[in-house]
Amino acid sequence: MRTISEALGGSVEGITYTAKDGRTHEVRPLTLERMSLFERYLESRAFEAVQSRRELLGDSYSEALSSVTQDIVSGKYVFTGPVCMKAIDTLEGQVALLAILLGVDRIRAKKLMLEDPLGVKEAMSLMMKQSQTDSEGLVPSGNTEGEAK
Image 1 (cartoon, rainbow, N blue to C red):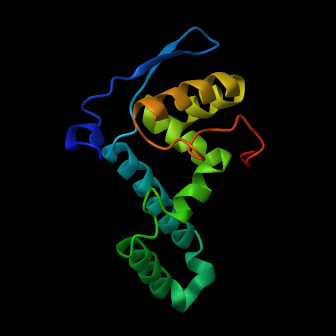
Image 2: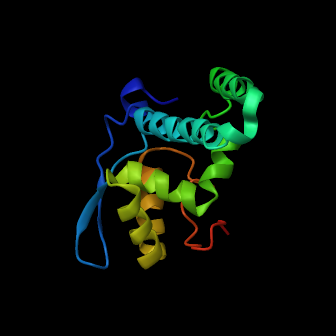
């Protein structure tokens, strides 16, 4: 069983990843806080999906917003749940998680994923292991077509 300090990432240091362009990044531990950031990313995507269809939804717009709110309250986007795992299995989800772990924007994270998928995968795999998190299914596959292998 993990201690609170371990769960919060207090006992894990980041690792250094050197990108192909020579810039170095610290891959930070996957802590509860960072898991929460990814959950909030998924929640905001759900709201954005409804908001972008406001005109199409017409009278059912409020109902759609309520449905997303209910999904959030019910834990649909919890980090270890199926929605999150499915999101991490896509390029977009992998980029979002990488951005969180590196502390960079998603544009930089996507550039790194596309330029050095194997190096990024190796760095993230190592960080997942050091974070004492089951890394199965939580690391980029190196696939740049949108689906993890």
